[in-house]
Length: 386
Image (cartoon, rainbow, N blue to C red; front, side, top):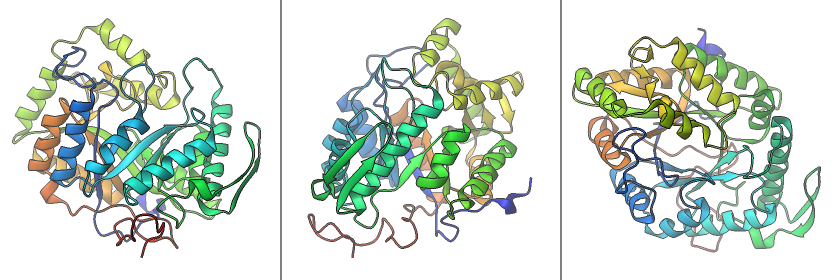
């Protein structure tokens, strides 16, 4: 595979963004598919994981969104934000859930609380009880993003679209990051999703696949972004199992799956709003090409996807193997990683002990012409970075 065709926005970044995952969607396990009251989604559990990741040196943390289970994302993020010190919050928004001007105000408020440490994960899946086809969902998401950008960068919101018609002053919704607003992270594999990210978003998030397949996605996004005169950064969302030896790591992976009932796993996968998405289908395809132990390529283990929707594979190995795999991804052009493990608190600590010190970590910079997210910040209310 010719990686030279891949172009990245932050090609000269000094370091890599390493992030963890806050399980506010009730998906934490000691054994996959076995619900444990001690691990269920709660303010106490999820906030402890997030604050631990902050103290251990992770640079960002994904706060996901789901209707069926768990906690409200924006409410959770707003409550935990004042307790954080350095970590960014990658806060998921499901486009269409909130009236865009009110969404812009909520995000601006959260950005001020975080002193500019807000990043946003754009989600385009169906809303609870509402069915739209994929092209319509992405048209709605495009309108939401364009309204947010008007709100953050213009004096007025003037928008006349298919879903929204607005004429409002933008003063009430100005974020702390006034050099363009928070970074937008986006994941989607359909042609409409790729086009939306290429035009408007900063970081293209992928789920785990073979190195060849990941490179194909990155080349496709590079070519599409070029048509808009842009480049994007690339991120990988993947689970993590790292132990002192490969044998220990593989044994732990097998232990995780040892009590899974097949029907329970199917129910867990199908309850998500994105269960029928193109991206989820690609995770299922990867399980089909895996060997009898579930490995689609060295250290890439797919069986974990039998008990969850969305991201359906884990990196499994010893510290040297995991470091080598991550550096290979970095050589391809991946600049951001979002990891998770089961149980999340234990694995957050284990990864930080065995792997995190091996890498120089950083926050992703804003677009050209904007100031990097780790630059000194002006006082709250000033709304600009120094």
